[in-house]
Image (cartoon, rainbow, N blue to C red; front, side, top):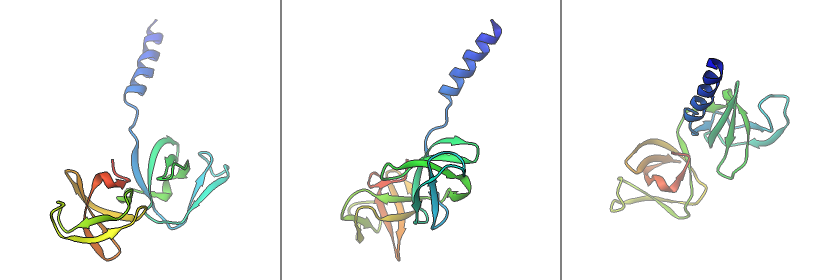
Length: 146
């Protein structure tokens, strides 16, 4: 009977305390997305964009199951991922402002799908850099930040 209760507690605790999904970015300019959690599985996609954000959904030893902004999913080795913060713009003609308010001066306009590096976030604004520009974007316009 004690073994049964221990087993039930184990199942409940694993369900309740399961790790949330979180974002990481690609460490290198070339990263393989595989069909399964091993180097034995074939490559589905070759990513060619450093700091591309990916959503980590599951783990298996040294591999992470990820989903990208185009809903592609698969497995990437942990050595190819980093905690550097970046995001993809989800709105077209998105304005980057000089301060975290829509009443500040616009710095640059970005197209949908543009990769931005995140410097910091406060409230519902993120300070980003893209090319030689720096400024603030509302976080609801970014994919890659929870």
